[in-house]
Length: 396
Image 1 (tube, rainbow, N blue to C red):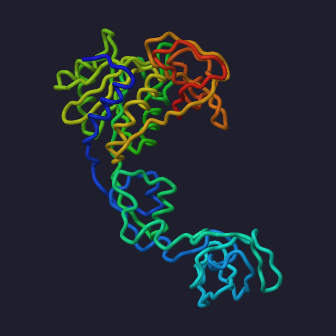
Image 2: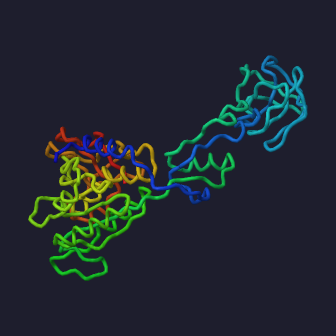
Image 3: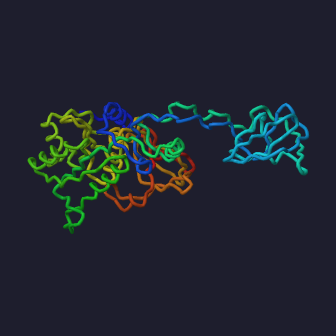
């Protein structure tokens, strides 16, 4: 068992899960494939562009004739071709996206010519190929455009549509069991007694699992009783990944680590130097990986985002999970005690440039977490920041 830093913990998770194999593959429509992970290699069905085309509205002509006067002998628009061939001091009016006529090797923008009837005059000295997108400049037929393990983002959706892929092969979504522990936890549709809490963790984790590309399976709450806890943990290992919430600290009734040990678990670490979320367990048992997330809501959310999300994404087929970290300017001074990397609720401005810490009452303060749209990231070895200084941000 070991205590690790934020960076070391994430490195261990990424190394351990690097060889995870996604469950299966399935074929889906292009629309259904958005935000899924590609499971096939995708190649270009033809040259892109298939012919040289103009990237500006203007006039196609011969660069060797510039500057000078030209006779306009025709016009070509996008979506059509031209049978005309250019001779000396001749030009063809051309629209953006239209194919380059035979004999032309440059395009002079319409803003750079003076026109009188069928004659144009320009002082430009264009180089050959200027404002022309050559045939095959974007991709050659048969070229590899996408590889397995890439997320189908909206630009990649556009690429797939461009090459005529109405269906794609993606990895099946992994199943992720979510097990909350503790006698104090009751279902969300039950009226809790003063000493009880509703099971918000299971639902926040389920939402995070969905966003990471998995299918959540919410198990019944495990009471602080050994046999039922063991039964539910064994049930959880029937999924591709098990996420436990609570029961991983040093309390008398925190039974999770004991059960896992008796199931032959290998523990990679059981504490991370972050706040919130120090008592985080990561290991493997019964051939499956598991995370023992802390029980407080903020701790659960943060540790999932920073550590467990990468494992879900690996199981979903993503080749290179990444942590969405950025920088923003503090609107007010900020101080904390060194020794821990802190992920604290904050409000990121609409333009993404400024960050303001949100006052909260600790890891159980769900209303403050709901007001936040990011986490301020305070480095473990720095004590203070002034207003106007840049600080790390974990995007939600």
